[in-house]
Length: 119
Image 1 (cartoon, rainbow, N blue to C red):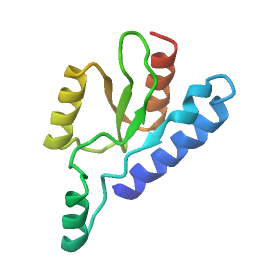
Image 2: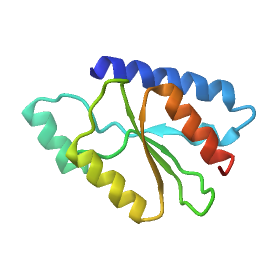
Image 3: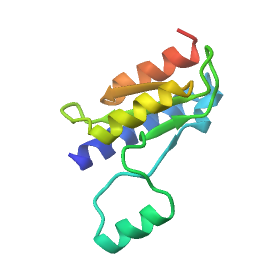
Image 4: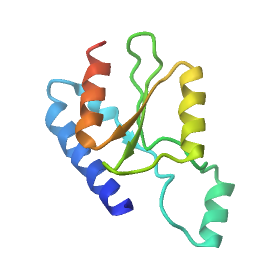
């Protein structure tokens, strides 16, 4: 499943490059590398440096429509949201961010355009 999510995310970033002429803010879109399988020692090191389970995959640090920025948890079309992801999405929403769970890059791109266009 991780391979499919990676592919969806790569496609979304290719889309963002093509759209950045019209929406230069897309150059600020970035991935938060919190996911993936790790060995115990690497997982302990990541935890020690501040990696937290459930943090959304993507962040667009551009204020729009009263929000501070946009967080997206991008899932493969048949992906499953974890409890930690649900907690983070709710907590970030409560802090004034627009947050979305998107299944597939197409949904994520639509959410991004709606956000940038203030819809």
